[in-house]
Length: 276
Image (cartoon, rainbow, N blue to C red; front, side, top):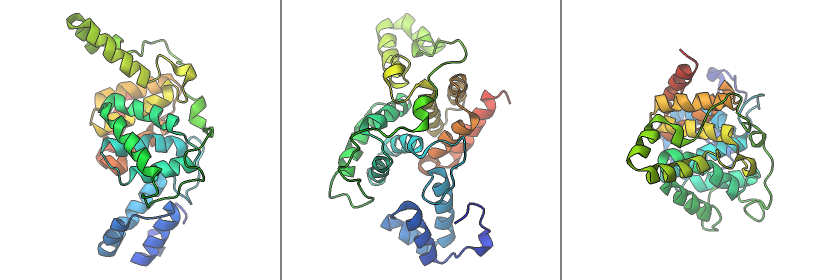
């Protein structure tokens, strides 16, 4: 189905909607079928939107967009932050089919965890266990499960060099400089964790550099409604060479989990970062 298909020409029967959704995703969760039969157009619009956001089958790739792999490295931690152990394993199986490894996933999840808390990483682990279990029925594992070697994707090479001078460490922020005057050890340990998660301290050995991880942090902040902090991270992403299109793609990856309000707040943050 073309992205520009006239809505008046689309078959909105439940059967046709389910067929399109299954073709796009490869499968469909049974609970969505109840929605389809009760409110066909609602699910039709959900499928059209999410297929574009997550680049499901049939969507045309546009130059400058985030890759499918990078979208999953944002979407899976967002699902796990919600404790969603039904849908996250399905996305992990898709991630495996796209050539991503658990190491790559945990790098993305760590960046997300710098915002939502490290307990979310345990949910990622549980989702991985589910994805590799024969008892989980949704989506297909590639032969052998997790890929033995990471398949390269564009964002691995992006965001490695800061174009403008600056100190990205948490310890350099006004808030944590203040914290250090009260408890220097706390500030040091908190900074060490966040700097590691955002690849400030070991970017050269990481799959994802600071710029790519900044996109993940921006998306996570949008789910928390933190417009000002998101704007600061957007400026940081720009400093690492990430584009406005990439920032917008990252923000919209979390819309299925957190709603279009998160995307709207992200756009406010982008405008703020751009000086509007």
